[in-house]
Length: 638
Image (cartoon, rainbow, N blue to C red):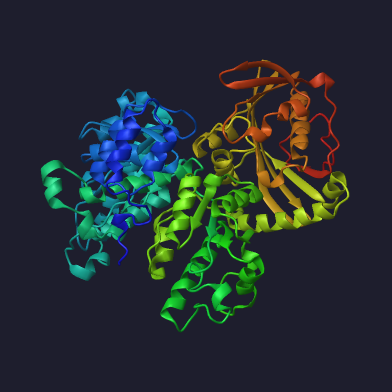
């Protein structure tokens, strides 16, 4: 076999069952969104995507944070893209209502405040422009003119972006440009200023350098390179129907676009769960023994398995959690990690180690519970097709890539699947895997402590609190869009919206970091409140599940009450909006002393009279930034 990214080989192939399943989905007495998502996780060609999109378009929007609207503005025909995006979206936990601007109107749709696109106020607007949509005129050898051409084209994109954001508030997605399939000067093209290749490359560099926060970049140049430029460009389809790229590429383009949108909504996966025998090494450790398995340099097969481990370690270094799920004796399985000299992965790299004889679906649920993440945050990598099938049936929300017989392709298949797509990368992301390792040490201390109060005191916690700023903006946005469990309202905000909060005097915004004796937990809490009618209204209150049961929520309420009293307010108002995942905070307001007021379609509404509130004495040393003013201490302020 050979790996062809166009075939999306990480997805299972339904074959002839697709039409049967689609008919059952569309003709059922009640439409099943779960079955729609399951169907979307199979490998679908352009015709199947189009049929699937027609069925989906007849259904009611299911609501939730995965439901959104998208407008596509393009210099080319984009209708096939729209239907493919609609059908691909459920694969990523999305439900997209896609609109395509009339052909040739992308500039007026972007710049005219009264255009259909801007009036509709979509969640996302895609500027799907290729090099034919710009005035990229070749001027070989003229560096001054070449730089001017590039600057003008980038400026044009900036104007489109600014106009759309100002008129509609949408998150704008811009594209890098694929290179042309042919060259003017051969290898000299990339060196000679002013050639089309040079102009496109410089445009891509400048585009990425100049895009502001709140704008997403879809790397179509990289996608076209992986697909192959000769495969990407199709002059016949351009001349006949003004299609920017080959119709064969459309499913992959839709996949990349949906991945990016899903990542911006916090729906990327968080944990890679690995099988062991014939996945991380060749052979069965329980039968072949330590020296009988195949792994490491000097063997083509051994190097293939080593590349899987190196890939996993690379993912961990960027913050992806690693876990083990294997049908094995625990002691024997761990022996490979402890004693085999060619192992790249070691025990300290694994957040949860599940080696036993239970079914793998049950072990995956246990892994998610141990890590305090959703089952839908897992990717399960297993060479055994029967095990993959069992997990897909039992846990359809878990991502399970198809693997070929040849382990040479395991690593590239997993990375090509894009499960861990990111729209930003912060220092907290880099430390995430270590945070979970530190949590294991904290749990061990809790097991040795005689009571919870003693345990919390022993942690020597220190919280630092500040208002929103440019330094924390990316991480704040990331937490708002990814946190689902300890999140009272699950309202989502773009980075540009967060930036506006920073300068709005009516907004009380807090970012909270926590350290303890075992290390730095990073930013663990975000709060957004609004002052309204002498009340402090909590709009957003979320917290990392890594610090549950540490009394941080009491500290936060102390702070909010102190701020409200300083502003001469008399009451704090909160809302709990229930979702499938935030049940752990259902009773939070009640536990903190709030009084139930009413219930509506939005959720339950609560109030706290400041006159009756006494600050809790929490075992957390507190440091406030100078711009946070309280009329009384929240306890332990440094």
